[in-house]
Length: 458
Image (cartoon, rainbow, N blue to C red):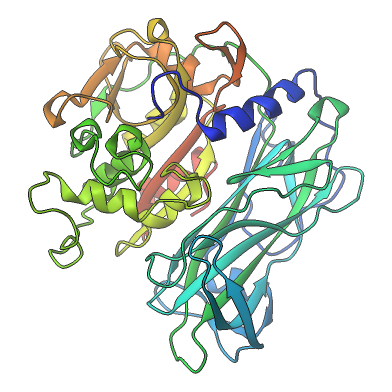
């Protein structure tokens, strides 16, 4: 969690976007859906849909891309890898000031029309980056008036931190849209301007002369046009079930490794990620944890913080970096999306899939929390017979206190709204239903059905 009611950098930037969104209306998409990624439905078959999530995951998906020095590979987990590099480029790491030469290759997706012309677009990816490799993800949007954005960098990422520092890139704008850490947002949605279509480009890097390669297994993009709102419609309870998910407190790590965003005080995202990774069986080896002070309890949370840390954002809350971290564990994949109601979460829980939600609230807006926050991640693990939300809330004094029950109506509103009043009475932003979902690389038929029902392509 960001310090209680102190605005994080993401919140300050997003508030400016949220203020511009008021009164916007989305034009109807005019482009037909292009080939190259599996569809989760269209605007006509899903009236009122405010989110469209697309993904490239199959061998057939990867074959639709344009390759330069890369190739698609088949197998149990199809992906894209370096084949014959195009050449070498120098990269100066802005956080270490070191310059090194890297061989590179690219894969570029076809243009993909969004069923929901979007005010915000978020990319996410799942990949392996052995030592001596890393990758860059870029996004180019086509506006509803037919003009294009530049190629925006959505992340420079490696699972480790020995070669480059994983980083978002600030200062990217064309005067019509801007990248805020991990989110491309239309600057003034009240004009009706939207991002109607997208392309994604992967650049895969490795040390010159090496045979190592990054492998990207999943590449996704989520476009959304969530209505601007202080309150959201209430959903009716439909499930009573609780999943057994490990419980970890971020607060017991307060002061540990302050180089990663002031220590555990701000580690809600990696702490939540680690809970769900371990729910699915992901485990870190003693060797992986050897760098952590042996006197520290729950060293895996320290590990998650280090390996989700965004050196530009200066925090562990970069949404795609958390999903990518989860997918470094065998047989897991992770996505960033938006959901529409607690009914969607019930659908996932019924299939055994917990999820992490992002919310902001005043202390009095969430009974029993005991704090207020400008941005906080927690893990939804079930629902009571009355329909209230059972959450593993990492902002707790210790592991034993992590399990909480929150009132359904309060939780749904603080998670799904896009606007709120902060402690100073000023209008601030809400996440609009942002959610991380981690699930098996080979989900069961029931899990596939649940993911499809909430708009997540498998």
